[in-house]
Amino acid sequence: MNTLRHYLEAGQNVVLYGERRIGKTSLVSEAVRGLKGFRSLFIDIYEVQSLHSLCQRIASAVSRKGNQKLLQAFIQSITSLRPTLTLNTEGAPVIGLDAQAVKTPSGLEPILDFLCSDYSSPETVVVFDEFQSILNLPDSREVQAIMRGKIQQQSGAFVFLGSIRQEMRLLFTDYESPFKDSAVLMEVGYLPWDKFQRFLEKKFAESDFTVDEAVWPVIFDITRGHPNETQKLCSALWMGNMDTHRVTLDNLREGYELIFAMQRAQFERDWASLTGIQQRVLRTVARVGGKQLTGKDFLRASDVAHGPTVLRALDRLNDLEILIERDGEQCFTDPFFRLWLLEKGY
Image (cartoon, rainbow, N blue to C red; front, side, top):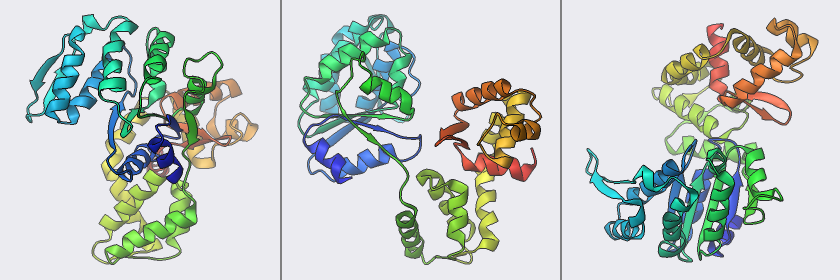
């Protein structure tokens, strides 16, 4: 945290990459909050597919700030994109952009000029979330070159968040990438379990809850220490045991069942979207683990005849972000999906 704050204060551009829902956005938000007088702009470009969509995401981020002077300055800066300003049903401002005005990478320049000059100051942090999605754009390399050229002119820091490690490293370390050496790379990993446990114990104690010591290893075994998933389970255990204010091995199921109830529809949709072979591979990973998946034991357990067939299924399960590779092992991105499959006997 202190290192990140130091970089932001110095106007150093930063790349933060790590698994989805691991806490990258929260980390940056907390870092900015700790810097007196700093402001931030968060732009989520997850799965952006077109230049118009990218510009619209930036415009939406600006409009969400709800600052009238900022909106006026922004609209005046992007007149070539023929912006419109309306109000949604809740009375919040919405900026629309003419798709025909953003058909080539050069159409992005007015918005970038605003971010890197009019909006920029040494106390400003602009954050692009899921930045690897920039690779989805037509003429992505030209878009990257334009962005790199504009961002070099800014006086505040830009932060690029990403959840696909290889794509983020490609963007910022590949010799031919326009963004090469343009930012400091930092990987966001899991918290040390002992420190995380103490933090969670303190949170439970603040509401007069006690957690039996034997519960913590089970929680860690289920979530593998993933920050978001661990806190999700702890929250469910808190809600499921309000009557006793105590969490024990005997009432852990209260937490599981609450999560299953909240996520059942999503789990059912994900399961139904898979082919029979993909389901067999996923079911077997849930039962026996995600190592040596082309070996004889896994093939026998999954009733899949050939290793390449398993690999194709794994590619699809990774593309769908149902599985993710961690240290050579295929793991569920949502550990409660795994528990649900085992509980329901799929």
